[in-house]
Image (cartoon, rainbow, N blue to C red; front, side, top):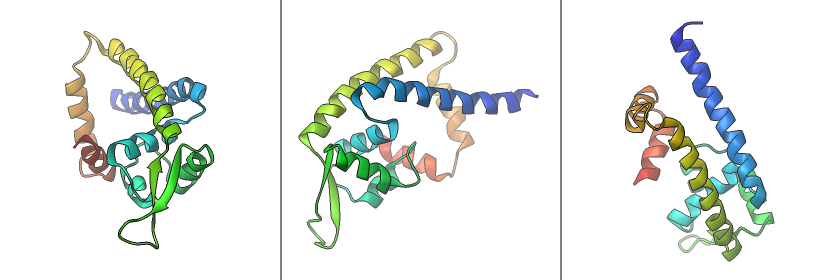
Length: 150
């Protein structure tokens, strides 16, 4: 195995293992990383349609409707009529959703801190971000990340 192939496998493994670790941490709040991402999107952007949420999901499911349905069942979000088109509905965080997001934000910050400590004094995170950004240049995923950064 050459270095680039090893790097590809390690990158994928870091993503998979990180997702498992994050899911384990979030399990105390009975929420998945993708569900948490939806809550974060709604908290930041407010009332959105399912398709708008799907357009902003970076690490989420190809089927945002299923994720949304689970959040509705948990009473973390609700559907409300779209103000400009009564045929459409938008998703909004409930008070319970906001409380859950507050708890999961603490968990996520702790998880991110652990990751940052692993990088400390080894490689500049900004340099790694630049490398990864070049690798996915022109992709839908990079566009989603850029939109969420604004």
